[in-house]
Length: 130
Image (tube, rainbow, N blue to C red; front, side, top):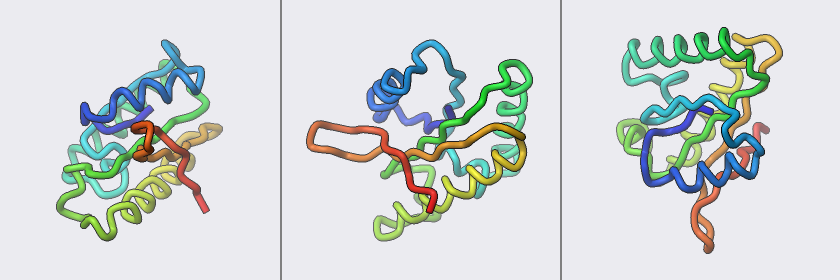
């Protein structure tokens, strides 16, 4: 799972992991901006270290899928997204990250998710790749 390091969304992410049946059975990479480091990194080092972490975890665990989780109000996106286009920017980054991962790792599926606000609180929902 590649997710944002923002503490405000950890409860929703933990609930999502449990619902997905992955409790104690997943690797976690938490970075500001999550998928952003793959497709629009703030620095070359951010992109390189994320790719290196994915490669290391893949070489050890040969996981069949990667879950990518972004969220609204992500401060790592302040320089490239506004309240008016933020969801679209995240959707674009998640879709592009899916393609990059699936091209790089034969047989691995990448799944894009987005943290949304519900009346009952926050939840992680799949993002359509259409």
